[in-house]
Image (cartoon, one colour):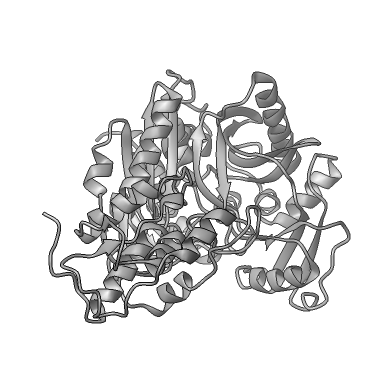
Length: 534
């Protein structure tokens, strides 16, 4: 008989845990995987899968003891989840390699984390904590602006910027809904670019696994519309960012396993956003760093979980990998077009979807409510970025019409000044001259009264000829082409009766989706076009 395989327990069977599961199997390990969702997307990849809530540490421990009794259990790990404490609990209770449970709590509870950083005099923002009992009278011991978030969640859920006391109290109440512990932290706002970094730690030695630029948009929320690996910073800035990250790892006591960090570069220098005792999600540790470097953080973290010297962490190439998100205005997805076009773009590696026909979708308020993601890789940074952004723009989501949520969104304001925290923002921000020209465009005739053989558009030259960009970087001309592609209509621009101010307003407020929704509502109201484009 051959030597029995070593077995590893992996927490989570979602997309973000897929690379670790596949890597473990490629290493010749037997994989036991748990997830609270019986239909988790990577469940079938596991040699053995059990549907167990990742918060239920006692049930996980019972399952782990069963594994140990039935043939051995040699390691436990997670990646891309906020359940590193569950993994640490199992490691501690079953005497497996890993970090202490208390250390994992320090790295997953933001109040405990900030206290550790404060004790070690690390660059970290001032903070205060609220509960349900103190939320109504919430105030700050430091000046606005501030960032409010649950102490125990990931993906920016329940996280937002606040600039005054009324916003603070509202944000605290909202964040409490996302906190399992019933606590919310308010932190001093850190102005400056943000970076993400992964590391594998073995016997106290830290190996950095990539530093990436994060691209954050849509205040007062913090929506990551993508990241680019590696970060475009000088060697001096990189050294300073990584120094703070490594000091943070040591302050938390993470001496075996993995760590991911979000570091801000402020006027005061690098400051720690947060550090978690796991590999990152967001397609970084499992996709963009391996694509860019040829190294594999998942393999290194699995080795550390088995108390082996980490393997696979030496970079073998110097490429760039770019991840970009695509998003939607609120509504119900009717169809998704352009996926084949996006996948055929040179240097595009992966397309991931979070939205599907028939499902409700919303404008993102956190990093788990985006419509999908695109990943590219290339030897040249510009080529990689352009491929990912072009692919993201190629995916076109048509919404059902009519729909109350979509209609309410499109009824929102379009005259929002640059820098305003109005949310959700319009797809395009017009200047005063453009707004004045829009006001002079005639409204369309009532539904059913457009007496033309095909829809035509009253011209809006100040807008259509501008270099404005929508949420994903489309020009007005590109957006109008997307509308034509989805609707199948010619939509010629001409003076005289036709689609006027309402059409342009829908496009300005909701981009291509707003314009297509307006056309679909016209058709639903008894005004379908009688001729389609060839």
